Image (cartoon, rainbow, N blue to C red; front, side, top):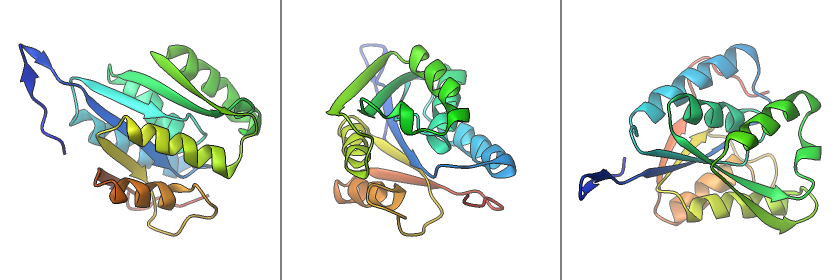
Amino acid sequence: MPVREHLDGVLITVRVAVSGHRGLAGETAALVDRAIREALAEYLPGLRGLSCLADGADQIFARAVLDLGGALEVVIPAERYRDGLPGECRAAYDELLGRARRAHRLEFVESTAESHMAASERMLDDADVLVAVWDGQPARGHGGTADVVAEARRRGMSVRVIWPEGARRG
């Protein structure tokens, strides 16, 4: 965990990015939510969360950041990113995006593995820590959580893996 310092009485913000599995449902989503909240509580006050707001871990993380009083920043991978999300997750995407302090929009049009990885790299550029909701398995495609973890580690970033006992990947 990065050391937080006070500078002239002001807490320096800890910037935490997220990468994680999509399609988390039911009990796994609840387990991940509790684990994320527990992890993020260690960065309070002064938490700034960075997320792409994908379904699953990204949206769980974003909601936890906001519920804990942190500031949310969003990186939108592509103009048509929202269209590629499952229909049942779009209302949460819209709500969380509306509550974000800042949105960084990449210049991609299509929501592809390339745009997703570029967005993850953009998040890492601004982060101190990566929270990875990850089962430890290889990525199912370019830009998956394993690739983001590898990139964060290559950069020498702190990576905090969250995969609670009993969690199952969808």
